[in-house]
Amino acid sequence: MNTEQELHCEECAHTEERKSHHSDKVKSNLTARLNRIEGQIRGIKGMIEKDVYCDDVLNQIAAVQSALNAVGKMLLEGHMKSCVVERIQEGDQEVIDELMKTVAKLMK
Image (cartoon, rainbow, N blue to C red):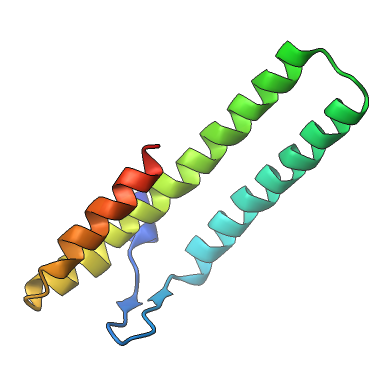
């Protein structure tokens, strides 16, 4: 199964409490990535506590930022290819403004 198919939201609700319903495989993938990131963060904390050389700590921070960006890209791709497309097809143009705000936050 390719990334596009894996990331596709199975259903995107458009009620006041919107939810994405990702497949179990996608949830498992995202959870595994976030668990690794969580471990990296704990590692950075330990490095600081042990007075590890600053450049080494900064390199680990860069790795965590890259890993978080990858998770964000995966979620954004799935959201755009499913939820956003679906809402546009339903005539909901507000989703574009919502998406632009989200992309702006991700690009900071």
